[in-house]
Image (cartoon, rainbow, N blue to C red; front, side, top):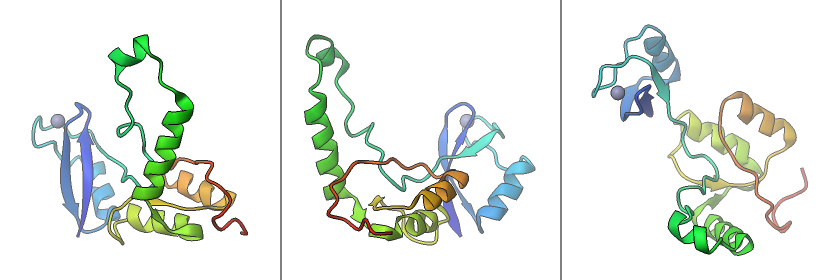
Length: 143
Ligand SMILES: [Zn+2]
């Protein structure tokens, strides 16, 4: 069984358990999945955070930023630090790990690493969201 995070067209989020991704797709296409709150059957999957999603952790206080615009350089370094400390470095296995997480084969977690252009295309084709960050070149860069 795999747990998917789901969302209806009214923005309600809930969790659904399925045998696999195919059974989810099948049930969803037949309108068998309904929102527990509003019975909506227009359900979409919320993608797992396989890579870097910094917007929530680093939301800028709007009131503050009006008078005092954030130092973007500082903000960016903060993001880099955060990612380095909180994301597991999977190196050149990034694409494979992202796919495994996406399909529920391994535990959901934050990962970072490197991917070839071809691997990036595969992730895009699968609908996996990831963000590129200009880390220093100390990590594997020899694909
Ligand atoms: Zn709903």
